Image 1 (cartoon, rainbow, N blue to C red):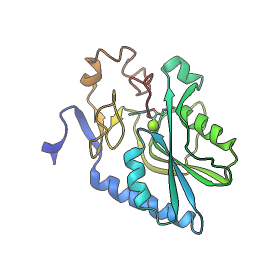
Image 2: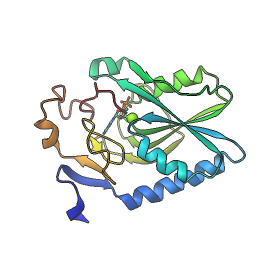
Image 3: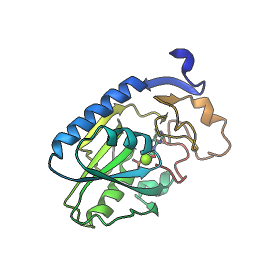
Image 4: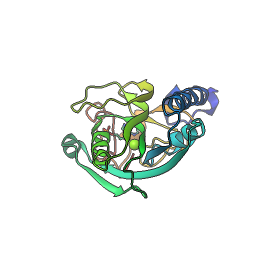
Length: 206
Ligand code: IMP
Ligand code: MG
């Protein structure tokens, strides 16, 4: 319903019903692909939390949950692929089937860095599942194994995704109204159109 949409949202891209349907489809697909296996879902905090909670309930094979927190930096450092680890996994993953769960792939640098780090720990397999894949040019090729939706190169929030830590609790994915970050004093880096749709990306994020 239009009246339920948050006033800071310019438009709803993916409503709650569509999210639910797609996440259930992804869970069914993952369950089939991992039949007979025991998988570890590795969520990238904090953005992947809502997606991961729903996805895990749509998967029927045995699974464990673990989490990593990383921080990507603003434009200059991000382009060098510099990612800082804030929180590591709780458990070793050697010999385990690992499925990284991400909220959105933008430049792909965060994911490339995390995947490379986890690969060195010699898991039995390593795949990537992202809810959203931004349609944009990428310097480093990342090919997620599971993609929920392709979205335009705009800044989106909701269902776990934030702007300055807010809007994660919206039950849908929406495009943030540009006036929200145009007036925000805590995101001086933001240059709409020049920022690859990533305001405030120097914050501990994901
Ligand atoms: P990447 O390293 O450029 O792929 O950035 C990935 C991370 O940036 C994601 O995990 C998000 O935390 C954040 N991000 C990128 N685009 C958006 C967006 O449109 N909305 C909210 N967060 C975003
Ligand atoms: Mg993220």
